[in-house]
Image (cartoon, rainbow, N blue to C red; front, top):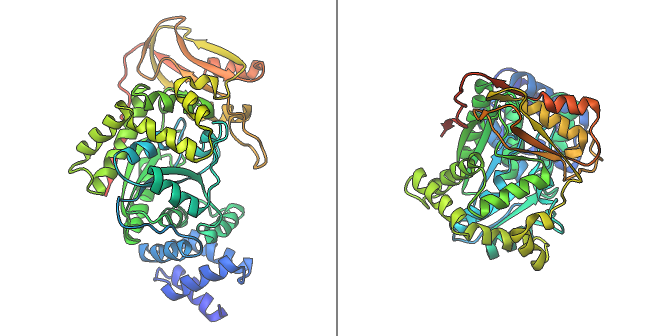
Amino acid sequence: MEEMEFESMINAIANGENQSKDLIFNFVEKVTSGSINEPRIIKWLKTMHRFGCSDDDVVHLTTAMRMSGATLEWNEGKPVVDKHSTGGVGDKMSIMLAPALAACGVRVPMLAGRSLGHTGGTIDKLESIPHFSCDLSPEDMIRIVEEIGCCIVAQNPSIAPADGRLYALRDVTNTIDNIQLITASILSKKSAEGLDALVLDVKYGSAAFMKTVDDATALARSMVAVGNGTGIKTIAQITQMDDPIGSHIGNSLEILESIEVLHGRGHQDTIDLVVLQGGALLHLTNMADTEEKGRDMIRSVLNNGKARDVFLSMCIAQGVPQHIAKQLLSNPTSILPMSKLKTQFCAKNSGYISNFLTREIAEQLRRMGAGRLHLENIIDPTIGIIIENHVASKISIGDPVFTLHHSSPLTNEEQTFFATCFEIQPEPITPLPRLHMTIT
């Protein structure tokens, strides 16, 4: 890329003009090949971070990043769908949603991530299942999806490799939090899956990366515009992330709760989010006339065992021996790693639970080994909590609030934190609904 061409891109960004589509593609190609030096890339990133750019520019950037690596190609047939969440505490939806959607007749080649900061990662959760392999090639993904309907796979370095290099530089140049760069990063990988439809779960609140509704809405609008601009039917559901999702938090514990839901049981909060996301995707792909009919379809396959059967097949296809996969569903605690120690925390006064310090709980569990403080850290999948009484629950002195699962004796500091990480007030409260609004 000539100096004059590069500077024309920089000037266009600074002046609020569209960058040349051809130059964006040329820039991404050189990022991928390593034939452009880092100072230039950093200058472009910092200019983008400072001034932003148009949706058209982000569509071109996303497309170029998608084309920088392998893409999944599908035969004619069932719609191909996926979801993306901006991350939350207890967010285990993908584990149930992928097999439920497959049981409803769509194909789900789901790329998922590991834990990031205080939020858990779907891949870390699945890897608490003995022998479950999340490292599949694009060819393996296609084969498994065509055979059983779904797979859940770790983000593959062969897919959108340009994003990998740009993300590494964003991380060290404080340009992570730019909406346009976030959008291109997420959607380049999702569009490489060859999707027909995508639902985005964009969270806001005290335990979300986006703290306010306005910030979450801005990101959602950007991703919906660019998703649709790349040819994927895309909607965003803006959801509240002040309270933990469902009843189980922690890697193997969230698999445990997911299996409960796949048996037609489980916490209603978890079920409702799976149903909400799945119903939207079935409607987007015309598998259901309305979102409500789509939700009914998801509820049905969760209750009649069809989603559970697909999950069993997915586990076997991704490396779990058949006898272990069957035992996982019939007696999960005999297969999943479970904690050596459990400590129950109870109410010290009567009233109604008004609040959990959700982000702080997740950070504390992370420090205890449930997540990573450094890239090389090994996760302890047994650490987490099971909530017995939730926000708005009426509670009396001595009633259990939650049980902590841990692998070593608690320090005084840990004991004090967990005893005070929830609040009880005398008056009844009405919890906020999960869904705030939908962006189409």
